[in-house]
Image 1 (cartoon, protein in one colour):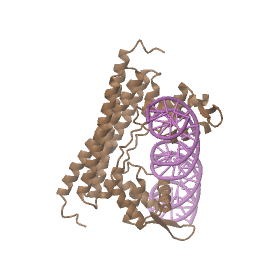
Image 2 (image 1 turned 180 degrees about the vertical axis):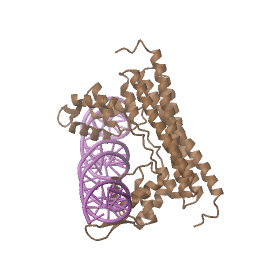
Image 3 (image 1 turned 120 degrees about the vertical axis):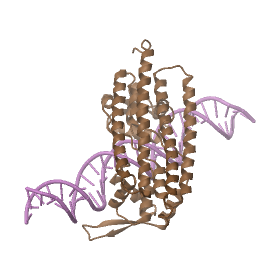
Image 4 (image 1 turned 30 degrees about the vertical axis):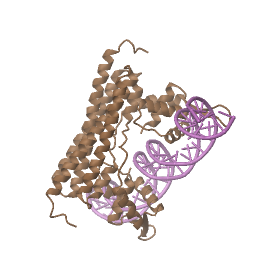
Length: 186
Length: 186
DNA sequence: TATTATATATATACTAGTATATACTAGACA
DNA sequence: TGTCTAGTATATACTAGTATATATATAATA
């Protein structure tokens, strides 16, 4: 989504290699927005192609590594992006929607079981996030921690919304199957 | 995410061309999960490559179109997928996280303004979803409508969680800036 | 009938994200 | 000293999703 600008922002602070960029990103995102190494390198390649960053080789051949630096054009791009208003809401896409949509020829019990499993998974996720939040609360307050804490809250708010939705679905599906037992027999 | 299996599910009902697949998908997703035509065709290409679907040409040359059919292998793949448990929670990624994370050297007012704008956008989204839900409620109940209604609810639950999070962020940022006016002057 | 708008239908080039392979380095410890 | 494990670092092939261009068919309307 904006890994590109995240990397630009990190490079604006200091030149880094791909591995360091991955770790820096993870640190900010609190470990729950997984950027994958492959994505780091392909994104950097695009930054370089677009003249927003340059790479400098370092070390002997054989064991060489590349350090990336932001260019003036990259700094401008980043600053412009920071103040540019966002126009899209985050799309909501989940495998479970497609599964539920196609499951109806199958029995209701399968749907309810799917929802229950999913609910369990999200409950576990919430527990994990809560634990992370607790660990964070034991550190001294500063801006980086405030941000990570807010990101954890975002994940918690959403996990909670998901769980409520799963319960809501279970109730609606039960309701619906009580009222339509005759018309749906194919 | 699972456009692939969505298309397989649609083809399992009846052979269709790319354009029809796009419309069928939109109908199920209630218009808020946008699949783009490009994605339909690239996904179908992969289905064909993997032997899950085949294409049959139809019409005269010049004005020919392709109709896609699911193969027995495709049917098996779809059925297996339907009952396969899901192991991942939906990742939560949003540009606004990255913006907020990098904004802190800038003034608080910019952050608050960003959050307020975002909140307005999501409120508008909720209004739109509510209207869709209302229109849907005037149609006769059946399973397809139940499903679309549930998908709209999912979008509403999430938009609500987002808005609450924006407000939560605004409050925390205000709080924080009151308590740290001396240490943060770079 | 000609013009315009809209729906139908496909394609291509791109960005974003996932999965996995590879190779080297540094420390653990038998 | 050898080897085993974890960490460091990069690369590649793939799936997923976005943006946009193109062309034809059909309906609307001047």
